[in-house]
Length: 528
Image 1: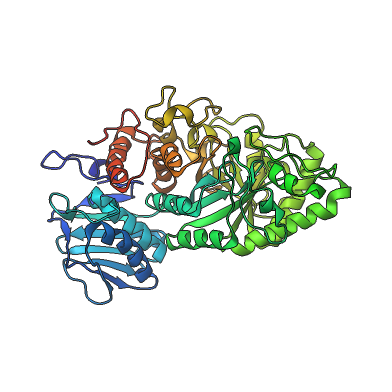
Image 2: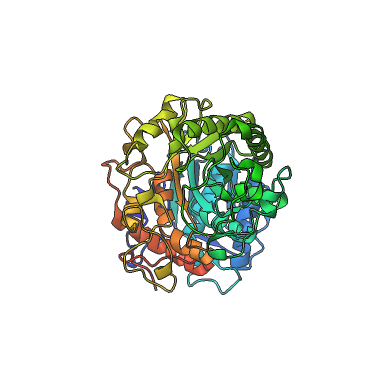
């Protein structure tokens, strides 16, 4: 039985069985009594990295249950959760794959690697009562801390499953970013793309160019307070994410979207005059200078900022923007992109660029393109995207009309935050159905399963200034993109929205218990 039929069908008492998002490869109910987590339960670990995964799971479970849940080695008892890393445990040996067996005789989660084991613990959290997300211990739910008896086998479809948080238009403190990391980890996402620079602010400390934050970090949209991450702040985010097997991808948006940098250093401007810091929302008016007179300063800037950010970033990717350079001539754009991408590649990282960067035929081998046009490609977007594949790279799919989380949900927004949040330029508001019913491999001809690295849901923050507002726009649509990235492709090319909406309703109970804000989409059978 697949998760579609197992996780939202009524049980013998007529109650909906807890859902799993993203849907696993398979979910088979077992003819057995459920598992019960009790004060006697332990987390019994074996294999490389299992103890760390157990501690991360236990940190939240202890808060919610009040149980000690010690992490130990040895033989598991029926009241224990066994967490095993060993060869041959995951479906097809997938690094993020896992199996889960639960019943009265215990819970066993097994994987070939710690990353897969961590993904399995997120499934366990969703199978437990929603109160497992509480921040303080409270009385156990009616019936206790039970997990239905089941067998799960699971592994991701795509290697790259991410979301982008724009911290440049509005700055978000470290604690907000860490909270968002926890929220995206619960849906088995494995990439956090941080949009660190834009016209309105430069948000990462660069020791060799200190005024990037001394001047360039002071502003944000609407005159709200600015801010930036020190190197220690950024390391903390990276390390916290890594503990949840999430890779941070930093973005320095170049050569356009650079007013914050240009306002900090006059020598980066063709006329040698620093522009006024910018607090608006227009795009396409700023650009690095391609003039030979500024080549030394520009190339030193590119080399040093990419080097410092790359040194802080253990992951393999460095995003260097490339979008909306509307004030840059085509010749200058191609020259600058060549130099920008070369500087990024010199750090040893694989460069990622928005699909406009595909205009260059001199990209470093393996450069990854990020597609952000529509489900039906506009203009030259498809051609530019194929350019990355033709140069040995792959593609991240982020079609704006279905994957951009900052688009309004509907024309008549609900809730106290709805009316003033979000944009609608990507063909109008984006419904939860639309966020769920797109297929990454059928958008750009010539960019199919082998060429798609994965999917990403960007969240731009022109209208968002707090974690609550980020959550309100992200959830539940991010759950849809997470499922597209993780779960097997629909056999008939059409996903079941009724099933998905039922599982979203179950996830909503977890969000409620954990204090996560979300948009109350009409049509989802939210539980009172």
